Amino acid sequence: MNATGKDKMVLFGAGRIGRSFIGQLFSLGGFEVVFIDVEKSIIDELNSKQYYNVIIKAEREEVIHVENVRGIHTGNVGEIAREIAAASILAISVGSAGLDATIPLIAGGLIARYEAYGGKPLDIIIAENLRNAEDYVKKRLRENLPDWYPLDSLVGLVETSIGKMVPIMTRKDMEEDILRVFAEPYNTLILDKIAFKNPIPPVPGLAPKENMKAWVDRKLFIHNLGHVSAAYCGYHHYPELVYLHEVLEHDSVRAFTRAAMHQSAVILDALYPGVFTKEHFHDHIEDLISRFRNKALGDTVFRVGCDLRRKLGADDRLMAPFHAGIRLGLPVNKIAEAIWYGTLFRARDENGHIFKGDAEFIKMVRDRGLKETLKGICGLDESGYAILSREF
Image 1 (cartoon, rainbow, N blue to C red):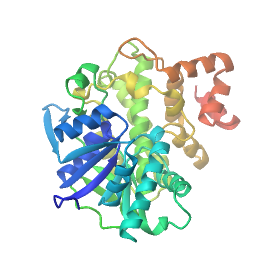
Image 2 (cartoon, helix red, strand yellow):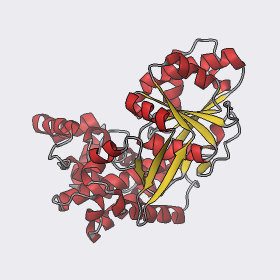
Image 3 (cartoon, helix red, strand yellow):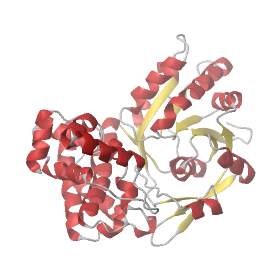
Image 4 (cartoon, one colour):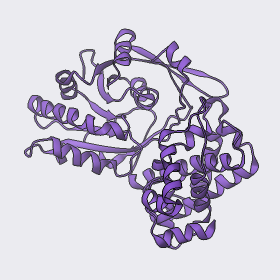
């Protein structure tokens, strides 16, 4: 507990998910939230105001006022270590690109905590959309901690499934208030029940699950797959439309998106038999399609579909279920169709610019051919490419 008697969360990452979701949940749950971030302007504003607002975008707009917050810049290594030493819980929401810089700071705090309190465990919520996140974070922590540190007994590495959609804000929105953040109403944090070393905090919105790998893959195989399937199919048939909700107004796009999600759900069910039911998949898919159609989010086809090198990656939202379906001998034709649409995706942002990585992908296709590009980026072997090309 801190000096005010409140439990304290140290949260690495004051970005959109950090502020709108993780920080908001724990602040409303009675925690002081200490944000650690590289953006000095955000840290300064947090310390000046000690509150921020989350704007819930739905038919009726709602404002969530988040208090009991402050910030520390990532350059203040000693101060970060002291905060971790005294924390009730820790969370990471920095994106995969920020993990390598974050882990050494956490390791320093764990050592300081051990020196101050001995065998006092700490749970770390890994709020990243990253498969096998626990394994990655544990490996990097071991590399940054001394051999004598009892990592397995003192640190709970809690994987999550981040299902909250947070749209990109305009420059005008951010200039008006750099702390304000937009989000959808969905506010459930699915996390690994059995990974905690301490009692699970009684915070409303936390949804502990026992078979966490299945829930992480549910996000990838159904939510993420459905999102890009709508964007890629929508762009292919209606390239003049800007927003995701616009393409999903078309029955053909909606039907294709639903079919791809159900096909991937069958594959997911085969990988994790007995975890989910057909009714669960049906309700989840219908709920997601409804959320994708939320006009108030203002989500664009460009934002949902861009970054082809990552989103068509071998272990990502389309290729992971595609590979698994082939391995299991299950139908993959709808997923293959979504992949094909993805290779043709050329959407541009509001300034008419194509995503930098997508320009590189397009150049690679032009220079090396589609087959070699997909083999290199998507992990396709000859048989996988044959199946894909047979469908299209």
